[in-house]
Amino acid sequence: MSSPRIVVEEDVFTRVLGVILDPCTEAARIAAFEDFFAHDVPDFRAWLDTVRARCQRVFPATVVFVASPSELQRELPQADAVLVESLTVGRRELELAPRLRAVQKYGVVTRNIDVQACGRQGVAVLTLRRRANIACAEQAMMMVLALAKRLPELNGRTTVRRLRDAGFKPGPFDRAHTPSSNWARVSGISMLNGATMGIIGMGEIGREVAQRARAFGMHVVYTQRTRLAAGDEAALGVQYLEMDELLGRSDWLVPQLPATPSTERLLDAAKFARLKKGTRVVNVSRAQVMDREATLAALRDGTLAGLGLDTLWSEPGEDDDELLGYPQVVLTPHMAGSPRLNATADFEELVAGLDRALAR
Figure 1 (cartoon, rainbow, N blue to C red):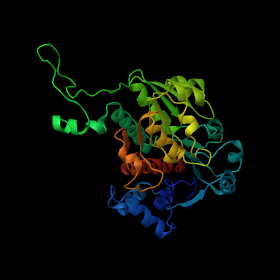
Figure 2 (cartoon, rainbow, N blue to C red):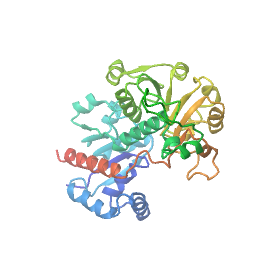
Figure 3 (cartoon, rainbow, N blue to C red):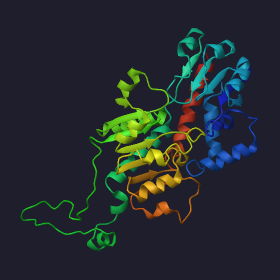
Figure 4 (tube, one colour):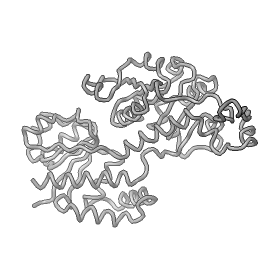
């Protein structure tokens, strides 16, 4: 059997498929991924050997990366398998691909793949519930909970002196008559149950966030360019709203969007002005979807009662960043998709699935 030819929609993560499967991958890329994975996978090359040994039908392979529909169509005539995230695989693409045996979605939502047409042509459609997406949703909910319970301000504040240093006014209650809870006398603690979370972008990560928010008893509303099918909305327990209405109704706002020219500074001063005073924003996607100056202005005037942010407008951040001065702000250094073991497990599963599909 000749080496399979796998056409891959290029993404910063899908590039690792070439590192795993294609012996012609440049040494600089292999070294870059070895460094990228090192803190969680100290012996990256041994991991590569293990994955390859398990999947000898698909290794070695020729891996070709594409970035547009036209590039995908150009490569389809020689493709044995295709991996896509957003590019479409429909009837036209299938007509161009006589050798195609598998279409791998880099995710679980197959709306860009004609699953029925693939079935008629005997092409397997594979999906992957990406562990990094789950981790991002966990990070978002961690930030939501931390802000709701004022954790950044209260962590370690267990003595009268420490509480007073932070601006609180602790004092015991009359235990002969009352309970002793919250003797620190901290106000502004929030419940998630019954609160409204507005998600901008109900994609793979948005859906993961929605599931977890619903588990906390939150009402979840969403907006995006294309409304979900009624069955998907019902399954997720979410309600569609136009952007302006969503902004006005949300207690918690989660922009879950990629950084693209169309999303850059989407949340600007005009959109912040539509928020209820005291709204909290949690962003584990990209800071660039928010206008930085508008975000800071909303913190200063109290429009935002809290902000959770996992990426900054420039990385690494600056020691004099104004955001560091707000006690109601939670910042993390681009950690949401971690650990790297999420990615290694994803690609082990993905490569094994392709190996089985190409054995048919």
